[in-house]
Image 1 (tube, rainbow over the protein chains, first blue to last red):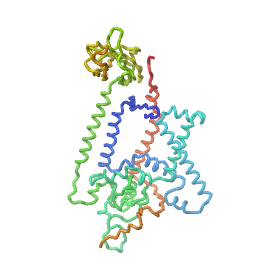
Image 2 (tube, chains in turn blue, orange):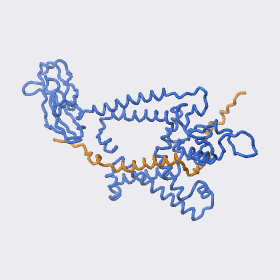
Image 3 (cartoon, rainbow over the protein chains, first blue to last red):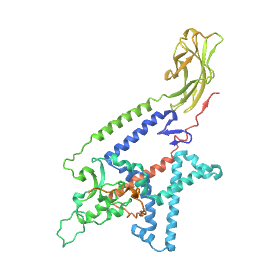
Image 4 (cartoon, rainbow over the protein chains, first blue to last red):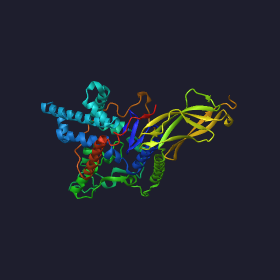
Length: 403
Length: 68
């Protein structure tokens, strides 16, 4: 759950705070390398099979369209035909359903951002109490509706940067949806009279008709292809009827399709990516498991210098904010790491609730004879249950020879 | 023969003057489409169910400051 508004992050039951940003950096790097690795090996399978845009478009919105307006030829006829009442009703029903589904999707997405409880409040309580939330839902709904009702494949072919990256991510080893031109060409309808040798492609055009981005896969690998594999299914059905082997269009690497004689499968790039990914994952896991159960930020009290104590010793005032990341209530204690410094708490707090935090003020006190420089380096330790869990560095200021 | 570049005409975008051609996609069917439906609807279900997951979510308190 990513509650961005309140800056609370819970990933698989572990609480993360904005202070854990360095872990987040490794997390995003892992995602990035995974994308690169995945694309280098499997091509754009993500686009056609798991991308939310494709799933919503092909499995929800287009299905509604097929249900109301019929298959592609009927849709075409309806749009190009006369403006009748039946057409108006169909369009009204379709767009109403599109809006409804878009509203539902925007609610789901909002639940991820603000949490389901807050979302239910927005839905059930009067609008004026949650005007911001209501406007957000309306905007999200309209965006989703316009994307799925009108923009459609332009998102994949023009807007989405991932498709543009494929030029650099794919190489002749990557698996792609491709047409086996060597087997298919010369394409053409079969006739008993003709004795010309023909390839397996009968030029039925089904692969073009099923394509949600409107390309002809036989022209080679194209930026618009999202690897949805609809053309493979369509072509396989035809090949089946003709009694020919399947996969005239299938998963091929570019090297195979181009028919390079010296083409050999080579996994060097993939192996390097895997190595990088392993290093990143190890660092990520190390940071997660080595996260101090009690974290803190230590500062000398704002605007303060040194103080002389009644007994003649010198003190500096500090504030510390401690955050409990252990996932349970814990006792804790602050100690000075340097034996020459005594730590005296101003407000005594010795335990933290689960996921709780506390602000403490304390003095570090030392004898004048221990002061050698204006700024002495020192540290404060956080102890919990007889164990040192964190050490925070700071400086102690006092000019040598101060009165 | 040298290619003649006519810069005076200004840049010509490939999409210039082209009206968008609405794509009518034929309803797909087949083995891979079936697999795709399983993957797609599975992910949709996951997306939907996880949005209701509050086991840990509810227990995330506002950061509590203890003491004065």
